[in-house]
Length: 506
Image (cartoon, rainbow, N blue to C red; front, side):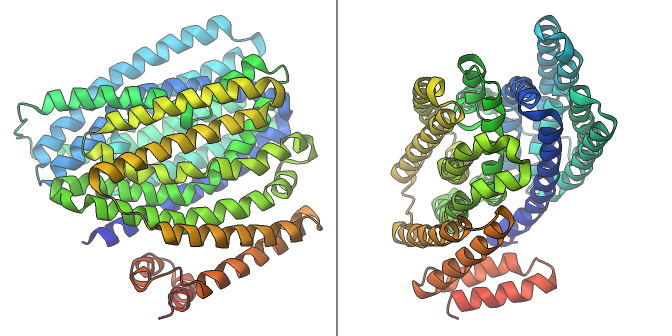
């Protein structure tokens, strides 16, 4: 199977998983926000963020190592060594998860306010299945079979949705939310770990275990952990901590988190494609690493084609979308919701170049980029949050993300001669600005519902019209994007393929 078809196949499965997650998460977050109000929502977000930090720190170094080295040896056809790596890292991760869960559980039981103590404990307990589960999730990525991650994710997120619905109906409050998080991760663990475990047991037991493998894996794991520690500051709304400490209004935490979540939804296509391309980049390193710059450059181009228009148009429609979804009690988040789509856009471009550097065991450059970006984030957010609250936090996050992405791509271009399509990026940006302006000037005169419908429609007309007139798409795009289109249901695939033919002038 070609890399294009492999990426398209994995993107479709990962895309379906993310679409379901996004839909359920959106409705669940709306229910939580409307039921609890900004203040209680702010506190739950604050606790959940701290738990999320611990989960990420404990769940990245070893799982990332599993993905990297299993993919490398599977790419070479050595399933025995891949099997050994899976079971060894699974054992190590289980021990680490136990220590992390026990330590944080002691902390929340000692420091959480009485009304939030049980809810906080339930959220903390969800760390263990989540961390252990991450090994099997990354093992499935290493095999370039992202479909294996789909059923557990779908069932677990639906379990979460049901629990949130019961919480709203029976008024379980913060305790119901904590129980929902624990149930979601427990179900995901049960449905993902055992099938992956069984599949790995079927692989050959003999392995070469090269002399330098242990050293390489330890070095990669530590560098990945350090990279993730710093990356949490840049990518994962670390500004919540500063908002909780330096902003007297706890509602600002909720405002920032809601705006951040709305913007994160815009990244689902970039996350889908970046993850699928990343899986192929890691496997391609074992097959023929000379093609990595070409694959990385193509990934950047398609991310630009999809992400830039989406984020500009979302900026124009963010305020009416916020009021429509969350209600006027969250009107204070309108400004941060408006600027967030543009400020989070750099994150869309991080995946391919990070995978390129990590596949070549050059993650020290990823660490360097995130360290510099972390300094920028803390400096900007620290200075702006006291006066501007959630808006200041968002500006700090955006400045950090842009810094990290620019540095990583500069390194990738310098070391691996990756050629980026700057002219096309300029065209896409120009077109996106005009499409966003059309959406904004129409939406500002209408109610939220009609503003979104009419403004969004106008922006798409401008967008596709200018893509056609300015010849943004090339003949090769018809083949690559057509491969993805033909994997859609026939009712959608046929018009999508026709539109591609028109836009590519074929």
